[in-house]
Image (cartoon, rainbow, N blue to C red; front, side):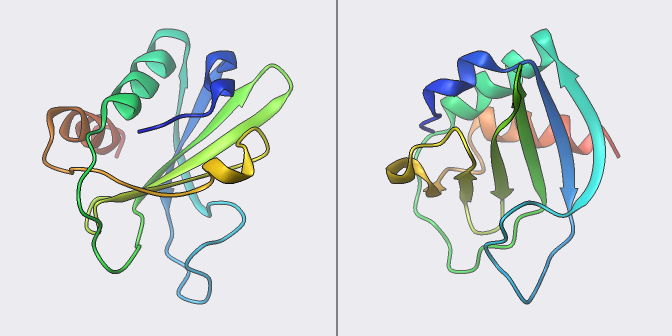
Length: 124
């Protein structure tokens, strides 16, 4: 998956167990429970997995279950919400160029996707 160049400034990642909002499928920010903070090596490893997500055909309904708020030295850089059921991730935020914002289809059965999901689930 294509990440904005600002990902190189990452200092920490908030992992969010997303609460679905039926009224707004594409909210301005993720709502849910913060389940962990990943710093340094953990944050770099998570973003490396995201970068390795292979492209796939997206499903029809975007219902994300997990997300990441990526922070740099001056605050939040971007957010990524993952919908394993519809095979897509949504990328947006202040450090994301407008043309790069949007949905990115990925293969949820790929090794990087499965490892990322394993890491998410281990937090609950």
